[in-house]
Image: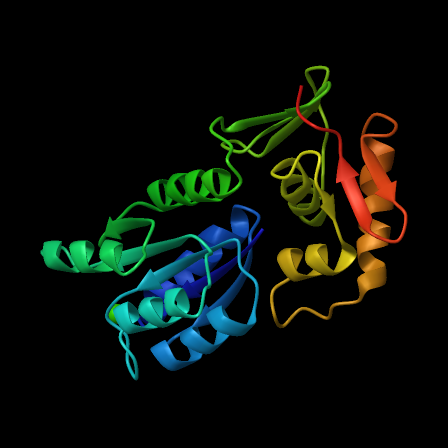
Length: 220
Ligand code: CA
């Protein structure tokens, strides 16, 4: 999963970047509204963390422009402690959730997991496909109850597929959702990761759909 983090306070941004990275997300960053608006309009994100008080263009305007342009990614806004009116304006502008500063990293992560799940119509935090299970809360992957150790990249790939059971996902889509903007992308690396992941999972868990991409079996 790939996130856009928009926050102008360098210390908070660094903290959030570290926490989101540890949680397994690929993270792009912006420290002002103009860059944020451009990234959200041209890149693909599974969710956005958007501070409202931003230089150059305020967060509310950024959000309104994304929604006016038809961008539908889940957006969680960060508001000031006494900014109840900001929450109302933010939600009315198309935000999906909010957090009041200061907040705990764990709460941000839980809210993001829920937004990403809900965006795919999934209610349960435990994702299953046959004997394969991925607990989005702990990041634990099991087959028949036995833990499967995965690298960060393998986990990100599997999590993306498990959020889309039964759907064909193209290599291009995977590339867009697994890597941050500054990562040296090479579509061949997706095939390498799929190959490695397959060796750790039950046979035929990840199906190749010729010419189109990959598909994980539908949830039972
Ligand atoms: Ca700010």
